[in-house]
Image (cartoon, rainbow, N blue to C red; front, side, top):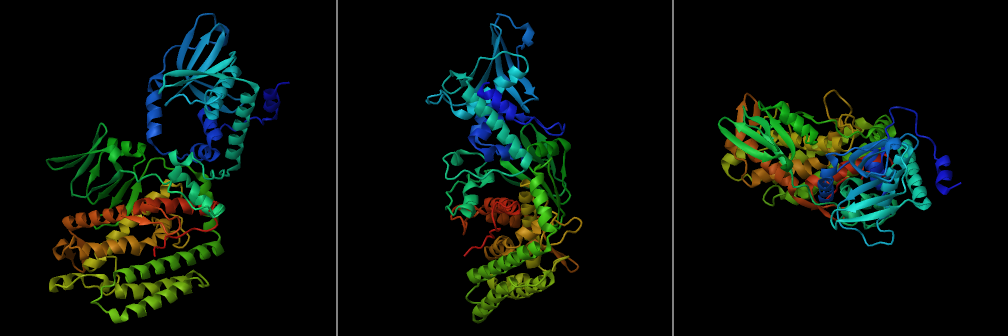
Length: 570
């Protein structure tokens, strides 16, 4: 009995459940290359475009169009045929493949797989993952009644064909890979990341996988700066009353009366619609297909929600989230650390931005009080006591907030004087800007959380309530001062927002359209500013940092890392 036959008998049959999909042969390739990558793509549905994936899609464009005809096994003759984009499956193995090309000659069939790049100069003629993929395709052909003696790889970069020998060793390796991927998918356990692997820097999923960040907790290895550079795409804000967003080809077009502004869709990371603006159905469909979220705000800046496509289908991470959410002791432990991080970051902002000419004699006293309160958060007995600790810290912090504002002129003093935080509605310019900044930050975290597969409405500290993105409010707490409050300080101190940019309606205060536009620009500029991650040591933009934190939280929920590392700048 051959080695392949022995392994085939040991390979459990695929699940009889019709809901369990067949595994694509290209995922078997990924499993041999990196088990974690295959799991992230196949089981968790993660994907990130890169130059390599785009080039690979271009190389496959011609064969993906199809063409030719693959005769039935019994109809094969001596005449050579060539069929493109042939899809076949094997119920025995539980896999499926869309084969680039299947050639038949002399009663034999041969799969030919197309690859970008040049042929590698290795002993076997090609790397192991690519040979396994071709072998999987050959075994599918055999299970459909075809005779297969060999396969081939076509390298577009060097325009060379490399034969693939289907020996017992390669067949056994292919069966082991199929079994490994099927077993991992059935268990729901994500494979560990590779350690210090040269594969990681070129991987398009490095920013999702976080291999070195995870290994810092597992092995203590310091991380390399693997994070891919920030996506050049930026948010698109549409806030002029009566504006209309539509699509034409690959362009998004904003129509404002007679004026038209065109923006390439590839340059848009998300869309924010503020107030009475509209979007056409084709534009909305295109944005959902491209996984570009659309956020909706009221004219006053309240975050109303967001529209996304089918979203991340990772059920396992939501199961872990719900399990923790219903564990009161673990929720309390997380909430203690969360409030402590929020208070410490508020204290950091005060320490950095306290203006020497304002109440300098009370600076150290208030910093000491906030440090003491941050320590008290670690010992809160329950959520009610923790809320009291948070409230005490907020009272001290906002009582000192005015000391960070450069408001020397009389008119500025009257407009931007600030004594306490108020909302629903905000009654002064500073509170109006704080409310808008928190709404923008909520939108940012809700989008990042949804991208990881988490439920933004199931929180751990903020309890669930209809329509409230509780988890987004949780994770943004340490960022309120560092991102939102600092944005308000910069907008006032740099003169980007002036007293005339606000309108009052009774006791309510809101930004005028021009002032809102200037403030949103200041917020987005803050999101683009780079910072050094205090734990990992590399520099990333604040926007990318929030994505990293959301994914670290998911890793924490699923037990890959023991604690959730809050962002605590020095």
